[in-house]
Length: 340
Image (cartoon, rainbow, N blue to C red; front, top):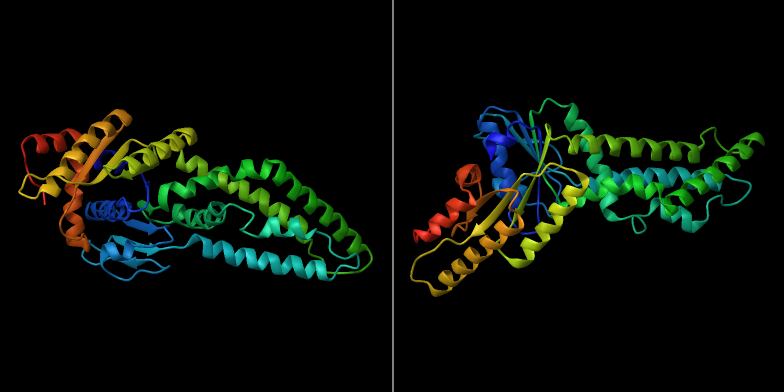
């Protein structure tokens, strides 16, 4: 796997919650750093566990990971926090502008809330706006490899729908109300009321700039020479079909996705009856995974009886990500091996 993704700069790792995408992201980042690349690994999942994977405390600023040649930096980033601050500043500015108006409220309350309240805007968009800011910074940085541990099942992808959302009926209504507000702002200034700042016009400008930034992000994420999206799943029905839906979305967005990681596969041939039954079920589901994802390169990570935490433990995952294919896993089953 690494011979392909090492040629790319941006790696997005996602999957249903609890599949082990954070472990996969952390192990991948260690591999790149030990190969000499200056690497950043960032958790975008609100339920952060990247720090737990490295067995240290992480926060919203980059922290150097010790023992990886000084090349690896990690952070846990909550993109919604950044959007919330910007939203709060915009609400304050618009409320001030409206309170100074001699004509009363220029934006109906419903439209005011629709524009500024995340209860009316899909939460993925709010999170995605923060992600855009971070992506802009990282693309301009000197990091040679950038790995994102995304929110469950690719919530960040929903951001790419925002230009269509802004062009939809609701989006056009927002723009119409803002243009009306801009007209009233001009009249207000004509009579000497209020500030020289046309908040509505500035907001319209910000929306257009946001669309442009999202479209630029699309170009980056869909660039097959620059980006790769790795899906992590479990050998369980619900996880498999959720992953199939995610792969379908990636195909629809034309985002490169060549690899599927199947995590926590029980390869066992001991005396434990429960373990044997679980192993047989996982083998059966590997066949189903092969049928559904026959066009993908599949890597298998066995189920370990110990918790994978810290750099040394994560290194054990790397060899499986590198070359433990679905065929290799099935051979291990046929040879009645136990990987523990």
